[in-house]
Image (tube, rainbow, N blue to C red; front, side, top):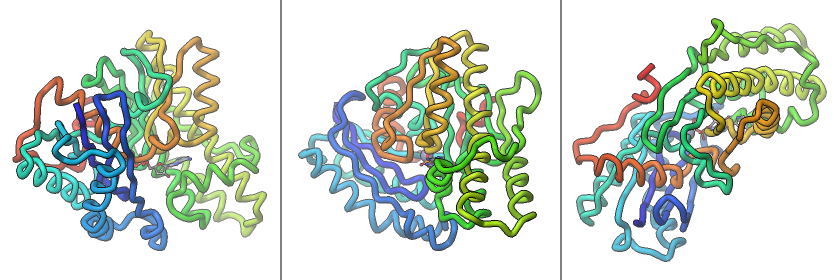
Length: 336
Ligand code: KG4
Ligand code: ZN
């Protein structure tokens, strides 16, 4: 089966073509980062407009790169939510139009399911069941994945998502959007034990997260001093990053032990963080757990993860109907 996957939930217009859930034939991403950077974050209306401009060329480029045409495509997969409503509508309506005109079935896919399944784009593929930590700009959630389509929510963020905390702390420090890559770069030269920022563990046994207290603590620390030397910045970045990855990785290991499962998966934009990959890897190994993560290129938003999620959803539940609507909050997150 040839699947064409489209993603437009935030500030990337992305398209990929895959054969089944195994062979990636093409992968094109038009990132809007440089456009939104001047405003310090994503401006929804500008994002929608840019998606309108780029969706046709991006899909066309992905088809060309795969050396296929729409006549070869068996299934269209598109992100239906969660995300920015205006941005999601561009991808969904574009997909519906192709579906109708070319008579190709389509499935609306959950973005979080896409991130979670992006791990199957890597060499090291996990076996079900597994505990997955999905940390992105909009969400930080722990799931118990029983199959390609069944995800039990174990915990979620009660305020800021992990990526959101990176983005907001970067803003406090005067670093550009998106904050995650900038902070991880700065952190390489810093001392992660220099400042003891608070870790929010919440109630005993809770797999929920909270990062807004940490963000406030960084803001207070930074505003108390005039110092802005490269050393100062690097130490704040490294110490803040450590507080985030400490909690994320500890809770992921605890969740795997709680569910008595051997396999942990890390996904979402924040999974591109080298310190998180390293620390979670170490903690999993010392707890006797296997760890799997998507390759770096597939941690942040892409069409390939939507192909995989769409492929399995279609096999399980068949196509979506033309009256499918977009949604801003994921039913996967609201289940708990
Ligand atoms: O999954 P994603 O591309 O979009 C959403 O679904 O939100 O994730 C984007 C988020 C941003 O908040 C960005 O700062 C964060 O992922 N991110 C990182 C890194 N690279 C991207 N966070 C920490 N370290 C990184 N290296
Ligand atoms: Zn995402």
